[in-house]
Image (cartoon, rainbow over all chains, first blue to last red; front, side):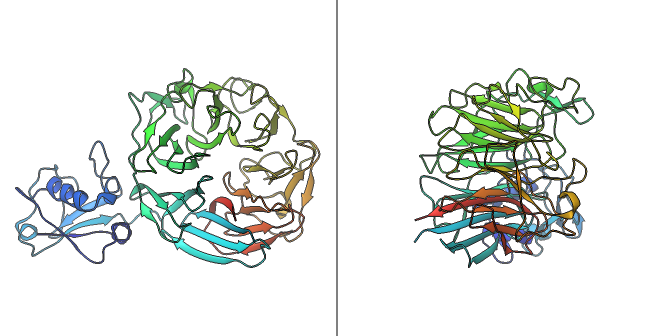
Length: 98
Length: 371
């Protein structure tokens, strides 16, 4: 299971507390994790990436293992520690605006 | 005894204010969706416990919320707003072509007869509709495909479709308004549209009497006389007696004819309300006095309503969707300010009192009169 940490407002929207765990079949990529997340929590569709283009929303970032993966191609494999469940995949709201 | 439910959208959440018909003691619930911008909430006339809310955020985009119990509980609905077909361009602030792009839902207008049908006015300007209670949204592309659309230009708040009026006497007729394109009318349920701006005069555009390009801030109608429309434009308060075919100015003795909201008394179709604002760059009441102006003659002759409203050092704004009326007798009038106050009058505007004083900036106010 892949551990996903969502920003507080998306946890509220998805009605979850703490981390979310999603199952990914096949290679654990950025795209695969987000697909699994949206399949499990359909209310998150459109809030992390665009419905049609699947582009990351500009004020969100993707972090894992102290790396910024936001600009990586969607088929980039996530770090082994994320695949093993030792580290979470983080969706982070930019420190801007409000 | 009848009850009143006031739906308040703010920059940081939604609030639901309820009272009995006396309208002097209020229960306040909220914030709902705390931290999110709530541009608008509105209840279905066909099922008053069915509410819809537009929830948005710079981080997370658009969410639509739906309640089936009058705002006690909510569930997220569909949020996929995709323009139908090629989007083309409109004009940007600097006059250059700019690709059409969805930003947010400004206004939700439930059908008069079906709780599952709702119209959504969005930025960049377009009209969407759901017929399944908000699960899916489809554009009515005839408006955005109007021949003039490539010349539309945003107002300061964005190129928003902010007003949707449904004609209760002719089911296919509806009016919308866009800042800063103007007013449009459809007589075939939104399939085709034409501008209805004759008589408007706007000095800020190259041709002051152009067919489109006017910054219409708000339109209001009384449901008993849907052919009579009242408009608060960027500057000028206007009136049409022929369903928008022609407009004439009725600013009369207002201290300034700039403003955002306009509304009509529930039982007196010639009694209308505006909140004059000093100017386009000074978005606060003239002289620091918050005054609602009422005309009992359908315009031109206006009286200041001040009792209970701050008459010194008041520099708030009242946004275009932030005024509403109930249908009790006497008619209640409500408005919210960017300073976070929601004021109510239970006597058609003669006296006012705040329901709440310290909310986040108020974006929208809608009122439901409940049995």
